[in-house]
Image (cartoon, rainbow, N blue to C red; front, side, top):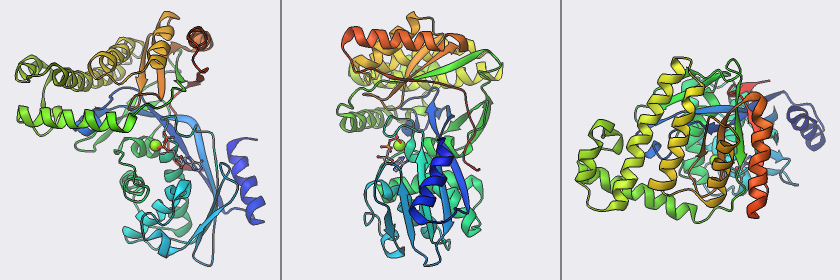
Length: 383
Ligand code: ADP
Ligand code: MG
């Protein structure tokens, strides 16, 4: 059964009624721009063809009941629980968080019954969290006829995750999931939050992106993330700039000369060059030179591996195997220490590249990777 039908079937089975509608939101992957977000820099994500679907109908008692196919039992809560971050925990917090964020923004959120089905892998770095938040947000806005311009949705969904769930994420995931457009990547300036749709016509170029789930266990990811962030902030302070985004790549050598330890210098070099790689990728895509972005992806990976030191053996293996099998470029995507790799490939070669990565994994005794071939898809929508 496809994901939309599973949401409908789940709704009927749980609630013995028909849903009033179905809303779908995609996962996302970041094409390039890693650890640039909290340095006020640039990112370039796109929405995936994998989606989370929410079937929903109003509930006259003004409460919220949500069922997900990931769990046996539905979770029910009212306004009192929604108004206090932490009262609803576990996966349903992502739903309660959206109710909370809408109520905190002054909206009269309708009670609802919801059933959630998803094809977005959970916890792999493809943003199943933003997908569920955004699909629930779209459902509640429509069911309640709420006056909330689409431009404000990403910030609201982000607040659900930051302030109710308690996960400190940036604005990228929700922006990509909500604003994604088929055949495009979303160029996001994390300082100004300005976005621009950049043509990313893989299909027209005979290309595809192979997404490889490394299945690597996340090793100390939280602590390492905090350490990277701190080093970037301290370096910015030493250099007398608001954020590392303010260091231009043409001034990089001079900036590095003012830093006194090698590790900090490498951290800074990653962020400054990565911002420039995002800008260069955008310029190539604007010129329709999709294939030529490959070397930038691979350079991004080398920078994450050698300068930012956030890759792990499974990830480096996947990148090397994809490149050896003919990928135009490959890199880890996401915060690091696990998660996914993406590779730019000829559409007809995607299966062979996937097989080569799987074989390289087997040779090293790693748990087999997940592989998925994608084209940039559209953002949240009512079905
Ligand atoms: P990612 O966003 O990379 O998939 P996160 O840890 O940010 O990983 O979010 C995953 C969490 O989001 C899950 O553990 C779960 O709590 C929630 N979630 C995502 N999708 C669903 C779903 N379909 N049903 C229930 N909860 C979900
Ligand atoms: Mg997430």
